[in-house]
Length: 128
Image (cartoon, rainbow, N blue to C red):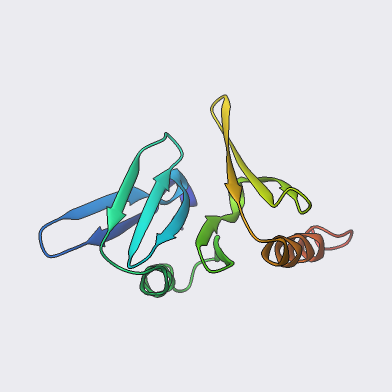
């Protein structure tokens, strides 16, 4: 059985290929028709594809595995293993820890409410 630490994803374009360990992916952000991949070590890669296409690629590559990526709002796909803190009034999602650092992402209140509800259902007593 392949663990998350040993699983890799492949992102390719016409001229490039990027092989990334699944556990190294922190989140994705949309930038118009581009998608930025943010790794836990701070590196960022940009792909000439929109976030919806990236979301489908992730689903296809991870088919049959426990889903660890979740789309929140229109602009983000996050690795839910790194959710640290949800602050709805400040519209802030904190991911980490990545070594001794964390990352703050600005997300809509509605998206954060939905994420909080999802987390509460998953981690409510009797669900662990």
